[in-house]
Image (cartoon, rainbow, N blue to C red; front, top):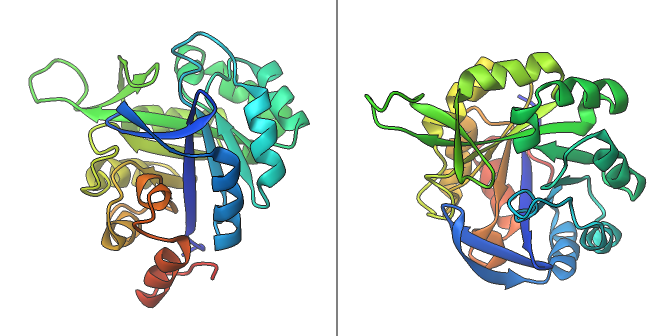
Amino acid sequence: MQTIKVIPCLDIKDGRVVKGVRFVDLVDARDPVEAAAAYCREGADELAFLDIAATVEGRGTRLAWVKKVRKAATVPFTVGGGIRDTADMKALFDIGVDKVSINTAAVLNPDLIKEASRKFGKDRVVVAIDGKKNRSGSKRPRLEVIIKGGMEGANLDIVEWARKVEKLGAGEILLTSKDADGTKKGYDLEMTRAVAEAVGIPVTASGGAGKLEHLYEAVVKGKASAVLCASVFHFGEISIPQAKRYLADKGLPVRL
């Protein structure tokens, strides 16, 4: 088993870190620069920065916000939200971003994944997949890809889409369950495992972390290569060192 990564997520809106439940009811959490610096000191393996309103507002990523956080970050730094083409990606790479994460743009134009992978290298291309569960008999995929900040169903089966993005050149997948997001009731293990077992690239579990056991379950039962957390870190319910010690004590390989 490869070393398991623990990744804090900075969901950014109006220049602040925010957090909601199932992608809505956002509340202010903390300053992004302060958060990035603190998480790096505490041992975060990577940071994820998501400009969550960019796509919905029809704009690109706010580079000014990214620059401030990039200066504070001492670990690999992934940025998503509002990335529409390889020009947007290059602008981010030029200011020191390590990886870019694309979601809606990839669904609307899958060839963007191939183009980005060829131009920048697959290790720098993350495809974020947001998903939800549908009732049986709904005539939509049971595990469906959703786009535009979770506002619109794409009528794509998550597992089929995950396989396709891998073939197109994605280096990893960031998988978020809208149903679990912010609930603190645990990751969607069924969805995570279904995707992780379908592809050969790393899958990061996102959405639902509420206690230490959830992180362990995401790796052991969900087969995730990394765990992404927001609320529990932002509001001091779990610290990064605490999370890593717990996983290590459970026999999982982590960087302490």
